[in-house]
Image (cartoon, rainbow, N blue to C red):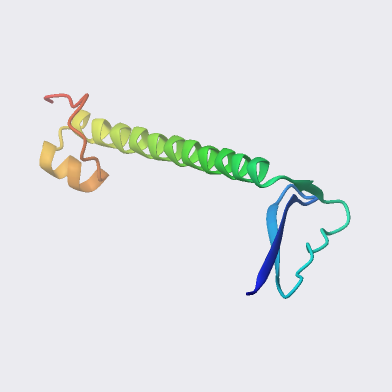
Amino acid sequence: MEETATVYYRGADGVLAERTASGAGAEAPTVPGGAKRLSAKAYRAALEDVRAARQEHAAALQAGDEERLRGDFEALRAAGIPEATARRLSGYTAEEGVRNG
């Protein structure tokens, strides 16, 4: 039966990584210089933190896009552009906060 040994670490640059060695009598791989070895639990927790930060960043970007589209839509409506045309030109599709022009 093939054995595996895995090490988890955070590189000196902050990147999370894992290395696995396999084979009969597999020994844990070495970690690069300057890297900090992590337990499997700490590695998974750090990955979850990264995922959460990415989701938060994506949500902030999406909210900014929505705000920009809404502003464009409202400017077009204020200029007298019909709602359907303003939606098509601006790309704004949300129903909340729409003025009845």
